[in-house]
Image 1 (cartoon, one colour):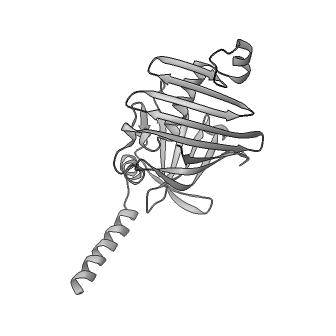
Image 2: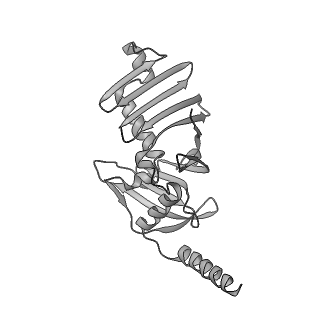
Image 3: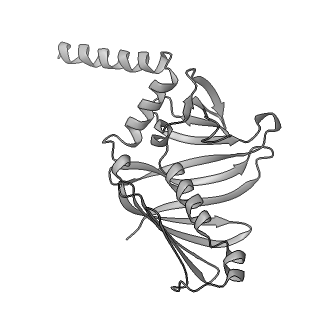
Length: 238
């Protein structure tokens, strides 16, 4: 019995020590990835996601995403305002459909922004945001070695600062992790930090899909005035 309590005491001490020690940026990122993707499944992700977005200024938008990362395949099916827009990228091939038809007039394409360039933009958007924090291992990502402790909305976080090589991106990002579990609970970006522009996103709840713990709900706000933008919720798609 004494031996059991001795080992429990060691484990408790190690936990306290780990929490209090000065992690580097890379160490914090590795801990966060170990929490969200413990089996390293993101690189070979093949699956379907359903995202429903609610916004005060727009109708409900439902987006079904099909991803096969090893095959470089992406398809989004967006339902909003009585339209169904399908955008499919299969390696170099791009297929666009509106309400099941590939015949779309230029006027309609322009008004609904149905283009291959936008399809690629959406692919980058969804694979980046839903691939976090694993995507922070991508080439061109610059991880600040210094981790800071910061309180946001009454809770203390370990904060990782990230920017990118010029050809990859111009924004500055901050990622807020729970100091005990290393779960990612907030991220924030600035185009120009001196102007306090950009947005922050609050992440709540988790949903496990193919062994990866994704944030289930994301609520978006402006940095400058905390104005609410929208909330999107992730579901398992059939």
